Length: 120
Length: 108
Image (cartoon, rainbow over all chains, first blue to last red; front, side):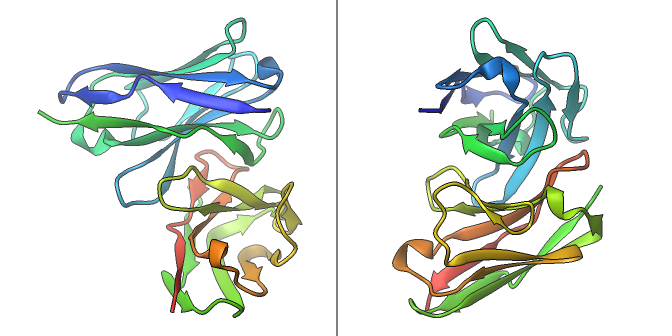
């Protein structure tokens, strides 16, 4: 059974940092592109970042470029999102999601999400 | 950036009725890269349709997708109680990937 379990969310002050993790199981993690998607309270889905299968290529939404870094450890079956210089508008539930294959594919599995709250 | 617009914002219907949801793109999207997701309160989104018209694994056949170019449609032929949710379209072929704002299907 495919499982994605996020962790690392919490309350952080503006300007602070946080690292999210997404532990994957039930599939060959190293064969799939992975993504982060966020959802502010009561709002819609917003794509944040993606990483290819071996971690050599990444993309970011303009709103997080230069502040967030996506990475993965295929030996540990874990996806990461390092978030620096956090702002109030980064407050959201952050989901990790698996692309259904290696490439620009839809997201066939999602984690349950982890809440990040940026507030003083 | 490809902007997706969904209409209506809210659709109020009764169980058993037909729901027709629209997704319009600001520029042409290959059908290969158009997906639909369902999200219920407190839950992660679930993939419903990919390739504009192919149902994902386990999705009942009352859900169907159609369209091409800039206009896409998700149809639920007969609403079941568990179908009342928010539906998002997504284009995943061009970075940045984008989602529409969603259509909420609620009980009339």
